[in-house]
Image 1 (cartoon, rainbow, N blue to C red):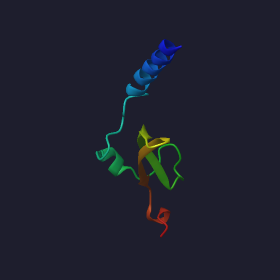
Image 2: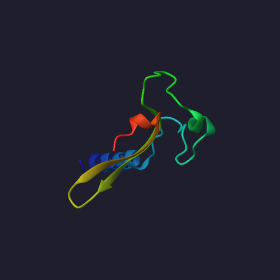
Image 3: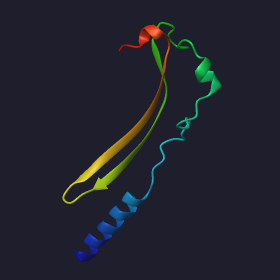
Image 4: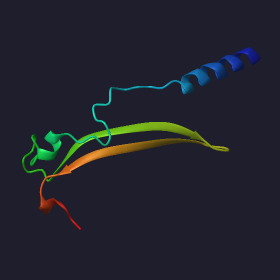
Length: 88
């Protein structure tokens, strides 16, 4: 029974310590292309007031005293297509 518990613990540590890459990041955070700057309307829907150009994120686990938290950090790039779209 003790060997099963230690084997299970070892497998759990191996799975938690590996990184998972779902797909390549097609958007570099902070790098804005000239094509995105020049865009005046959405190519899919010309009536759209804003376009989501991309989103990147990272999920990680934070282990505290008696709880495990799963935290997700996201960066989303949005292009507003017109001054009427901005509400203050």
